[in-house]
Length: 253
Length: 253
Image 1 (cartoon, rainbow over the protein chains, first blue to last red):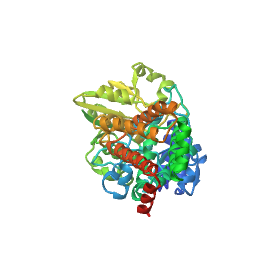
Image 2 (image 1 turned 30 degrees about the vertical axis):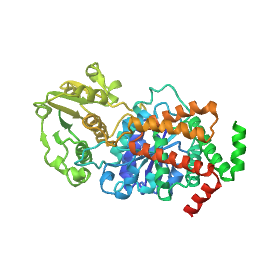
Image 3 (image 1 turned 180 degrees about the horizontal axis):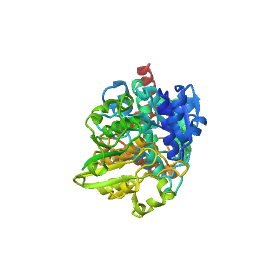
Image 4 (image 1 turned 135 degrees about the vertical axis):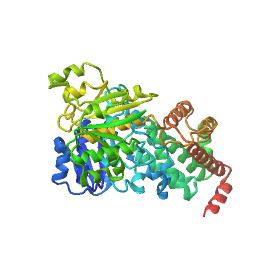
């Protein structure tokens, strides 16, 4: 499993440097950023002996570029989202994994996991969360749940690194293209079965999260694609008149 | 279990403030220090909403005063101690626990645990380690094992707090009846779409495994049931002749 750390619009160079240090402490080196602040002397000082991680990092202007090619996109959210921000509720109806649960799910996985860490002041916005296959949250105190960015990062890296050596069996994870195709075909299916329009986005997001949590293999993704194809084909066949339907019935008999 | 965090001669006020913040994030409030640096504006800024932890902290001139009354004294050491400093070897002959092992050992314990965190540059000295009942070390990368003081603190607080409360996923898990119904309706759907008979059992088992791994919520199970109902209804409507299909198309238009 390869971990790509994605800092979305980090505001303080000190935090960026600190995250780089924590990455290297736990054996991770792939850092990408979306519209980051400028990294100058203080950021480099905080990186300490992990300046190389900063120097090798890439910056992008959009999140979709930053996560391109990742097999799994994991978004980290703070508890503060549970209550106040109503527009984010939709995304939090899905179970939010703990770091330990995530580490367990990633056991034996091959491929790239993009771990998204949001802005220091307001985290990831709802559009960014919608791009995530899984959400994780560090269990914190109710009294003061807002962690420093690099502290959250350190805890997550600690969890993700500590089980790395134990895994034995490795199955091929579903490829990004297969997952994207699955999302596209699911949307087409919902359209074809005339699923209530106002529920389409919610249901697609829910499906994505279910499949994300299940950590689909490539084989499973292909089987699901086959199943959807079968359903759509059956609807089209019957739709195009009873002749098509009958022809198929005869073929099957 | 009551945790007392003991910073031994911390050199940088920013780290002290950061440790205070991480303490409060995980529900700990008792901070004591031995000969600390001066805590001024930057330290307070790093503490953010945990200034009260700094304000209530106590400073001592000796470690023995700082750990007075503790039932258990735990010293945290970095990997760097394993190799170079020969005079510290003696103390490392005792098994050095991982944070997770420590958390396990402290389960259900009552009393005060003093957790010692050493200087940023050289950790705890041999006399200080000699006062410890247990040593712990965070497993880090060989390449760069030296963590920032507040990062180590955050990882340790995370481990020590995480079994105290269950995670945010207090969402209603899918009921057994709903999962059984889902299996039954999926089978009916495969039958209706004339899914290749020899693949039916395999695909149903695969679906069950995917949903099982995703640990479905009751709400998600109900949405999936609704989706299947929608698809089956659509197929039946078109199957029962183009009249039904047309009627539905008109209704939708």
